[in-house]
Image 1 (cartoon, rainbow, N blue to C red):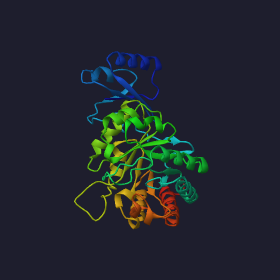
Image 2: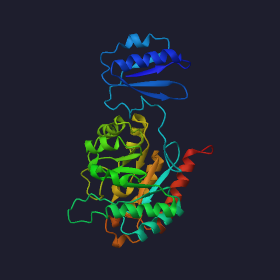
Image 3: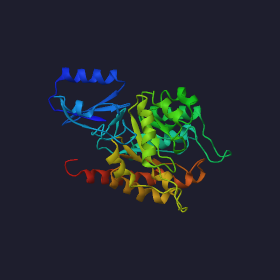
Image 4: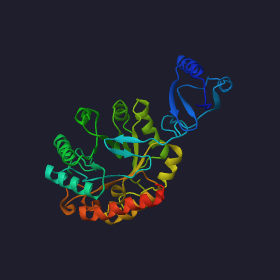
Length: 337
């Protein structure tokens, strides 16, 4: 249920309404916009008398929300969420480019790539220290050592780091990570989502390989229900009958999610395509469709990469692409952007 307050509402009456709702076990999410203040009521609202609430002097309108996700719902929070990570902003009209290797292989490798992508316009460094792999015999990442290498790259370049958390037991190691990534395979690992919901840092949730929009948003709801509202959604392609590409990138997700939720939307064309030459057109399409940012894999020697070399761009290929993406985004914003 959402309660829309009148523009010049009485603060004393508001406090009385909030106290009454809390006594009934209702949690209240307050969203203050330019035009209205909205109270999002979370809990068992079935027994609340809508007519009674609507009759209050401070109330403009009352509506029931049918969707099971509440905190992530744009109806609860009409204004877009903007997440600040160091000097980097995710959402709010900026284009955030996260770039780096699929897997961290050495300190020298990740530092060199971080310097290259920053020079090209990337504002965040992505890299895997812990890697979920389909085969138990494939490279699983450097683990804790990989995290240390990422931190070294951050110290050298100032780029915030985003890396994947695979298990609750790894959380203590992620204390100094800037953005926790929840991978597609863990999108519905509810214990893990609950755990990151109690962290005071941004969480980026990748869409599961066969997840619907609602299932994806419910995963975000798990994190937000724990008190962490710094949630980012990442479209990375879904599994369809097509086998030519690694996954099928769902660009329709961007305008659909823009309507359903206030959370920032990132697109990962590298995992969607599985082929380096498809990354550019898919990335351009994502920006044209309104994505808040991109996550792109960059490797200095893709032919010898320990993970996902075929979908990785070399720094010299990433550089013109990043400039095209930023130019397209600037053009789309118009002369006042």
